[in-house]
Length: 216
Image 1 (cartoon, one colour):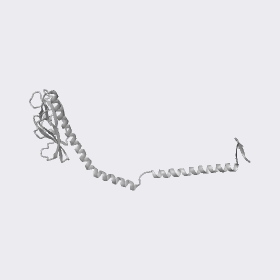
Image 2 (cartoon, rainbow, N blue to C red):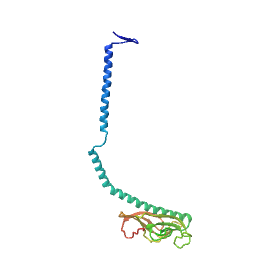
Image 3 (cartoon, one colour):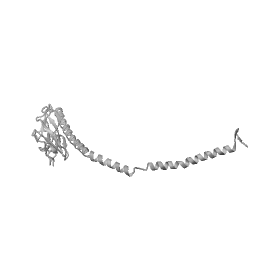
Image 4 (cartoon, one colour):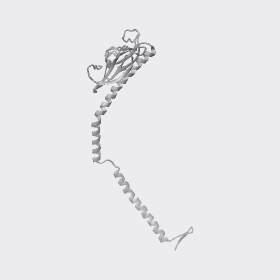
């Protein structure tokens, strides 16, 4: 006996055997899938205790070795920042002197009175035009151009004197000298050397701690 339809004939026994084989394959695939998923889930669940302990030990070693170097790098960056701030405010004062064709003065900021000149460069710097010519900043008669303040960890000295200096309309200075920048925790101070013709250059030297005065 044969099943006829659409000009096709299949023996019933062969047809049933093929269907049975297909069902068995589907059931086998379904029964194997959860085991594979379960094994994958167990594998991706996380670190073992040994792996975690090794990771923590390596991290602790890196922190122990790298922390001092990172601290030194941050201190150097702060010192360099202060030095470049001095260079920038000096260059600004020199440009203003040439542009305005007048003397421009730079003096240390007074500790109790920021709008007056003092004797401690560590507290900051004041750039102004001394219109009355008394070598002192007067908030009423003189023109304040710019001011700069430093952090408590920075100490600055002007080797030539503690009263300040002037920049001439031709860009030269009435006093050559050196700005020394110190930072707590570093053994080397960074310098900004000013020549008579007004040129500025960077230099380094071992910190002698002979003339450091902190702003209080």
